[in-house]
Length: 147
Image (cartoon, rainbow, N blue to C red; front, side, top):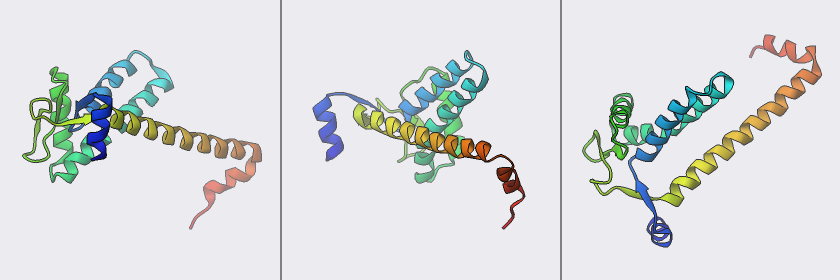
């Protein structure tokens, strides 16, 4: 009910079935090719992370996630920007024609929350790495530690 309420309040929806995330992932990979360096690697990693939702949809529907993701990527490469995963019958279909829609606010919030979480983890990792450098050789011995 909450999702329907949000869609009604905002009056804006996107196609579902992982179609938006697949399209964003494809666009980010294309953009990454123009950047180069470490930034390119970060952008490609973010693009891969966006594909976790379509992959999970495929797995939860009992579909082969690798085959389904390849099919989804191919559909988007062929210009089918509304292509998403049909969890009922399997395969990739046009989500607009299938009437599978979701509120834009839900997609925006999911991407924003995931991004903020990743940034927080990177900051924590950076703090831990900085402490390791400051401690000098003491951290170097940690590599020899075995359980």
